[in-house]
Every structure is written in C-alpha cells, then in structure tokens.
Image (cartoon, rainbow, N blue to C red; front, side):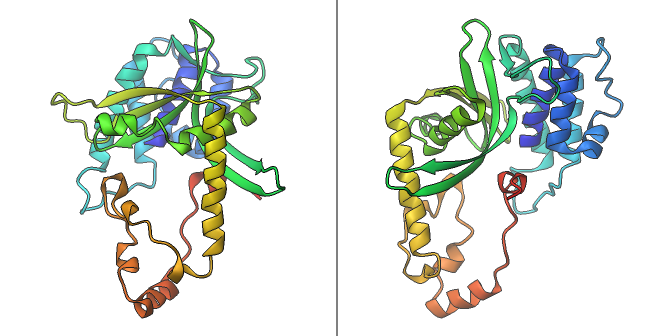
Length: 295
C-alpha cells in the first residue's frame, strides 16, 4: 500500500503539477526502472486526455500486482483484493484536494532536486553529554498548502478501523515527533505540522470512516521529550542486547496494533525453550528505510 501512496503522489507531481521529468526520476528512485516501466506501460502518462481516476486506479493496481505481496490464508483483511478496494477509496479522496495541497519540490527546474515523496532520513542525534544516536526512517510525503504556504509532513497509515482511539493515538506519538524533527533537518527548514492519512484496509462503506486525515502539531517541548525517550529506549536495548532473559517485560505491548505479537510463543516459553528458539532464529529482513541506507 505504501507503494500505492507513493505512486499517487508521483502521478500528482507528473499530471497535476506538470513536472514529468522530476516525477519520472522520483519514480525510478523509489520503484526501480524496470518495475516503474511495467507499472506505467499502456497508461498514456504523457497524454492529456486520459481520465484521471481511471488512470490512477490502473497505476495503483499495477503497483500492487508488481509487489512481492502474497495473500495469507489466515488473514482475510490484508488481502490483495481489499488493497485494491482501499486504493480506490484513497484515490477518490486524494483527487479532491490535489490542487490545494501540492507536493513540495525544492527546485522545479532541476530534475535531480529534492522532492517531498518517500524521502529516507539518516540523521544523528547529538546529546549535551556527547552521546550520539543514529536515527533512520522514511518520510511518506511533504505537501504545501497553496492558500497559506504552510508545509505539512504526510504520514500514511493503514488500519483495520479509523475510530476515535485511532485518531487520538497520534496526539502524543513519538514517531510523528521524530519525523517532524528529522524532516526539519532533511528539508532544511522547520516543519512542525503533520497530517496522518489513514486508509481502512478493508473498506465496507457501512457508516464508518474508510479514509481520514488527522492533523497534528508539534513544538520544542515535544521534541525534547521525544529525544529523551529515544535515548531511554536505546539504553534499554544496549543494556540487554546480549541478555534477553533478564530484559524487562512490557506486557501491555503483547497485543498492540490490534493483533497478538508474533513473539508471544517465545516469551511464554521456558528459559531452556527460549534458548532453543533463539538458536533457530534467522536475521530478519531489513525494513525499507534500512535497505535504503548504504552505510
């Protein structure tokens, strides 16, 4: 789905903002040349008479079907069919305000310019006592409100429900604070406003929200608390890196994100059983942000 979100922003940059070269270069950076060529084959991206909604839907479907996603028989929510439905809802909503919220571009005359689409950040937090912590991630989007010039980080979320609990969870979210702080470094100017864009992964259209934008703001106090939290969590990880058996257990996290943690069977085992499981583990696949970092 994040590939779909990126493709919709690229389409906007290409078709609505009239920057095909910058958009094409951005797409090849994110998807790779071969995959992007496959995704836009036959879409008529350089033709002006194509129906926007139809073209965007086909682009989204092509992105989904060229991904590495495979349905899981045990999961009837996160399926390719549901993602296609969610993509249609997302596209219909985004088309409504594309002209009012434009993708930020540093220099419209330079095809290699910095663009507010899928920007990976790799920054170092410097603390007063000399401690340094590397902080990495990916910024989904940076848009500019045409009426005021205000700039907002956009963070896409997929969810099984978009209720009040989901919406309020971002008021204090350290992730959003960190994205604002890192974005200010990446783009070179303060960015303390963010829009959380939620898309229900299985839209039913039965009165509940299938799409929602939740604006949030941060300030210096939020950033200071976030930086303190980062150091605290890194300290725990470092202290127990080679001694997981004595690491503190925060059991309120065992069922976060509306599903059980995949490591419950490991944690609930005996010390001997955990050691056997640990010895059978293999390195996890790196996240997209980690894969984008070369050093």
